[in-house]
Length: 216
Image (cartoon, rainbow, N blue to C red):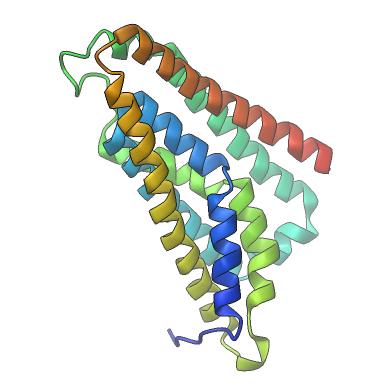
């Protein structure tokens, strides 16, 4: 791959940072996972998110972005899948909150495996409407067409976005995980926190679905 740095790369970094810092599905999902399972699960979720988002930017780089913009039903389908998956994960967290609270003597009990957590984060990142809009509509605007190698430029900017997300989303996860650990001696509070985390994911999924209807 030829490394071509766009002329407005640093302006792009500023825009990407602002997008990453704005709480969206990935951030709220990471916080919910940190509350439910702690810092390690949150960081695994962030890793999955970043991998999913990089695959998304790779798909946009080879031309799916214009297709999604042109065919609105396909764009809505991607949003609805992501919304449904968030609702499913939130409902799962709510239904299992008591089982986890009752197993605090064994911190590994009922905890999803590393691979499972990364996979769930991957799907949330892949079908993140905020990232989809950013990669499909905003990312190409920073590409330097006269310099050529547009695919390589888009991949470079996508990778930069993912590194920013890895850092800032990971920071969110560490902070939320630390608060969770601080309250972990009170099982009732931990159970309520897991309930809140699940409700956040369900609410986010519903909001994503309703927002897609309003946009449509």
